[in-house]
Image (cartoon, rainbow over all chains, first blue to last red; front, side):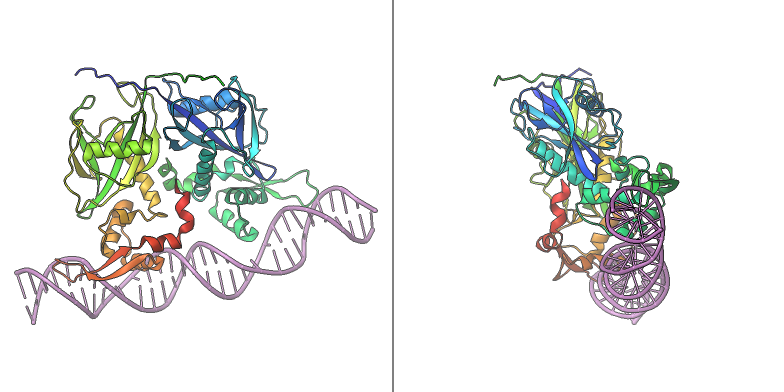
Length: 232
Length: 232
DNA sequence: AATATAGTGTGTGAAAATTACACCATTAAA
DNA sequence: TTTAATGGTGTAATTTTCACACACTATATT
């Protein structure tokens, strides 16, 4: 069997990341300020070029780390953008990933490479124009997680380990952009059976402290073992 | 502003297509027999390399056409596969698309290029080993359409324009691999309000002929206008 | 000590959706 | 006319969804 060479093109893959966080009752995403042409000084999603000897999943982790200092999140690919002219300097196809993380105790965001001047959280409402087609990438990703919220326990990745039902509800409201009924929401969430009520209560509030809950992954997996694998 | 060059890699994008059809009560996909190394003579999903000056959506259409003679289907991207060693000859990242089409009156399948020796329909059960990681790509795609079946009217793309409720049901059963209750299925489908009952009946059967129905896109769009755009 | 404030936590009834389930009707062929 | 094959239909029980309002508790303020 003879070795056949693949054709070569001046084409480049990149990764872009839509990282959601939840803070002060607001849904936010992670942006960087670019320090490199093109779109120097613009705001953009954290994203960069995939190396030749790394898988795209690995690349996503590395790139996010280099641009923001964040590590070990569970990112998932959600769409690939391949218009010819989406990058002004050549053909770049980008695979977009999302993740949801706890902003809370997060250490400072600090870019490792010089390609980003800084990284910071920005509310998803009132987003400014972003570099490249990043606004479109963000919108597609946001719609994806809205959908996924219905059949995947992604909300818990955004909350601290211990949370109140009110926090959980206001997160759902932020993602879905609509008000939910408190009694029905609580009834339904609790009926799933994967929330573990703790003995602790909220602290430091100047009103009746709410009970804290925890998301119980093991119970979730038991209850929904069917659905978990379908998801890729 | 100075022109900055993008780095160059020996990396290649490709497209692979998972095309579903429905025939004789069975769900099938389109395979080709490869006529080129690597995996010469193997069965594979229709797939090839993206040119530098075409978008990935355009590439998907072109490639499918060249390998199978099929045209103008509505393909949708569903996942991108980017493991380093998925192609034995170098770095190839592939974007996978699916489509669902009517096999029925389809003209002969005939590859245009020589890269495929032939193209043919194969039942999704009892699939043989496929070239590259195409078995995994198929599985991922199959799971995607199973999910989508719940919130998108994709089934109708697989049926002839006029179809009976029994045909529709057996298609659902084929995709979901489970039996459904006839009365409940019919009640529910009709309750959506986007099936148009025709005056015609089935012909050429040796038993009571069934009524024919049509999928009414306009009604569907009116009823579900919300959901249509979220889908990318 | 009284009171204002802000969010917690709880139940019920009506309506809608889902599920389980079995038999007669119609057609063509034998 | 009988047989074989599929078409077509309704109801009752159960579960899920939805709409809706007020008393409780902890703290801060006076």
